Length: 472
Image 1 (cartoon, rainbow, N blue to C red):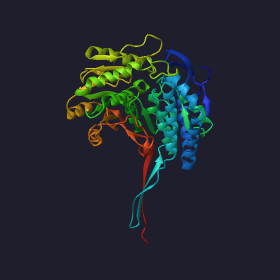
Image 2: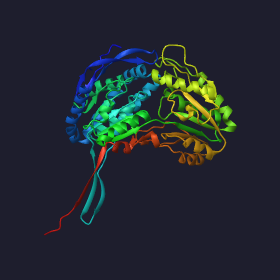
Image 3: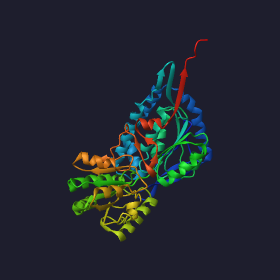
Image 4: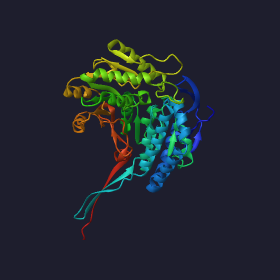
């Protein structure tokens, strides 16, 4: 790719100390080079953010919000360019890449419209207590490779609106859309407000342990999230962790099996299943189990698995070799424990292509059921008793999302209330709204993203408790 990508540090587009390859997962070969930062460049970025932060915090919120809206407008004007680059580095079909970019625009605009007003907690007898919200300072964003643009915006929007400056570190396999955003932001934001550094996972511990960084907002695996949390403890950093999930879909016995199978399939296979809130396991009543599995297999076999840049592609490649190997190993294990109805074999071609795979007849202790596969594979499990299946769905270290499907809405909602996850959708899936907070429970995360709760994550509560002096 003929583009000189550079990092954004202190308002300047900065080359790295070296470069590394960025691989197109549809070909398995490098198509671009990414600049690589070292510790000295990271220190420059942190110093720039620290220097810029007091002035940014003192800028009226309406002016900060206006600049965030300018970022949204600039991104919207270049949707096609960003979507094409996103497909090249991430692999998702072009239409899904376009949805991610447009969703990023909506997210920035949603946060630009939010305000944190002082809250009067007490005002009586001459005693006035007001809770104010102040910026934390320099915050760091560490983002994964499955949704590299919108997951950055989930953090950038609230951080900037509330008066923080940011260090952004994208995943090393999908850094280019973040760098392109930095080029765009250079012309809009004051120097130092947003800084972007790229690495091959060498700088993470330096960021999370840095004394001049007040908060880390991380999205990624639970294993890495634990390391982020431990490393941040030395300076008692604020952390937001949006981690892994093993989201269960519970299908109730009053639905049309074919209709709901189509919805569950989409919830499991969008972005080749590489979504923290994708449906990772489906529980289906015994009387409709065979029909439901057959419909899922039919949909999987009809999928068009190809390069995401080609028109008509419905499933792109897995994003990287490491994840491809993990998914393949889980499928190979599941084949010895259950029945593969569709897919199951990697395509014999360059790139990391695994067709959508449906597996039935597994026990609950199978690795494909217990672990987060993060790929286009769905285990389908049978149940007879609703109380039993709720207990089985909750028997997990994860608790990010989940779904319940039923015609009787009151009954389905009652089941949803019993699912131990941060969000449970009823008769829909992945209904993400920038104005609605999103949280994980158990080992799926800490803190909130999106909504007012997500905005407050980037602020410090500051109480002013005043009382009038009596006359002498």
